[in-house]
Length: 225
Image (cartoon, rainbow, N blue to C red):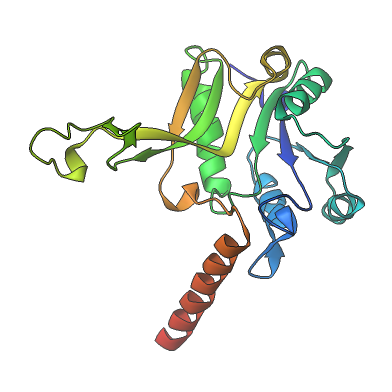
């Protein structure tokens, strides 16, 4: 069994990217996506060491305010190089990788994700990743994948779901991350999540829509009081 003392949390953070001007500094409600994820990471049972990997001083300032260790990194355009670097630094540790762009993958989801792997299925798999089962009709190169388009239509609840990897959470040993230059091992367990926790804040339009939903929900709750 894995000792929880050998587990660390890594939160990769970025101030802006090609999808969003503010990156992980976008606000969900009155809190940035990065601070949401730090808050959730602090509630992971049994794991005390939390690191935020980033390039900007603004990220370092948030780390200082929250008592989190900041890992300064150079600008990396190749993710495999980032994984190799982190894996080498924490070669003998188990790494719980949490992405800020999934604010609804909360501490409850994270604790279940970690507990199930560490205590139940570690001997069968070498890594863990969050996923969502999509029960939709899928085509590839105009050919049906999970249904037969030449036969009678089948309702969506009866078709074979496809697995959608969501990058909300990964779990892998540093040595394996270093070896593969990846967050995936050779035999990765797929930890299923519900729809809400699989929602990713990808861009500015995305977060504006979510914030509008939050505001409307607050108004509804206030009207019910």
